Structures are given as C-alpha cells and as structure tokens.
Image (cartoon, rainbow, N blue to C red; front, side, top):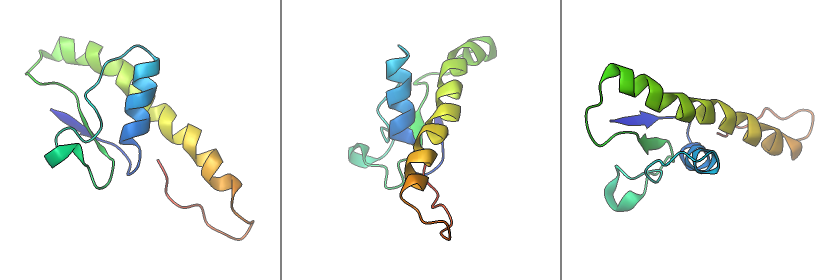
Length: 90
C-alpha cells in the first residue's frame, strides 16, 4: 500500500515522520531504483493490515502530511515579489 502526497512532499513527510519517531519506507521506495520523479509517493505498508491497525498506523503520517506543506510554503513565498503567484511546493 502506498500514499501519494503533493508533488515534492514525499521526502519532507518521511523526514518529519522520522523526527516524530515514526519509521516509514524512504520516499519513492516503490519506484525503480527508489527514484520518484515527482517526489510524491510513500510506501505505507508491506502487508495487508486490518482496518483498526491501519487507522492507528496512519494517524502519525497523516499529521506529517498536513505539516510538510505548511513548513515549505512560507519559505517558497519569501523569495517572491508581490506580483508573483506562489509556485506549488510541497
């Protein structure tokens, strides 16, 4: 089972999870040579967990998925002039 997040966000989500003590497979692990061209795929489970196990398992990564874009957007916007539209970053 895998999870697709916003482009450019898989590696930051995995890093945030690691900082929170949550072990995830490396971003892009489901791609050949581990290279996801869009940095959006995270392998979640190598097996088929029950729905109860899945709910408990995904709570931590879900918080990381929410947090990663909020940490990167202000940094991306900092280099913009007032007339530019923000580029889509994680």
